[in-house]
Image 1 (spheres, rainbow, N blue to C red):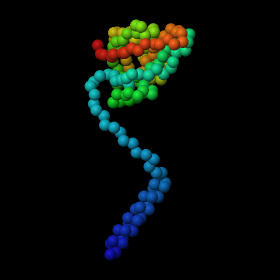
Image 2: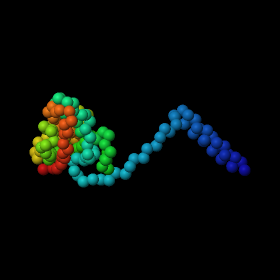
Image 3: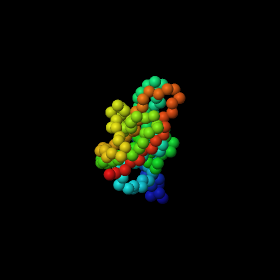
Image 4: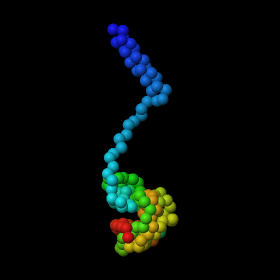
Length: 160
């Protein structure tokens, strides 16, 4: 009988100490579950979303650039992040695209969140070095009237 009482006292003391520890160190705020991750091929890049979304809208009579990335996108692939593309390792890549009929003059990539004036201009079909990191697209355009619609286009990435 004495052993049972000692065990009950030990449990009670443990619970009191545990409660004091929680009071001193704070309560658990939340628990997060980290999803499973599947190993992918050795490709150097993955998309952030498809389609990307424009982050700024051109104004009448003003030339400039439109930034495209995944902020606010509703159709992510298995891995979602705000940049349009993510390069997991440095290497040489080839972007293939056509801006014909879209109203855009050139296309470039810039570090995610970086200034489009520093974008590296892409030449369709030409190899280019790309460092590890997250990137957005920047499409330059000439001044256009109200109601002008810039056309949709696709960019395919490959290795040489």
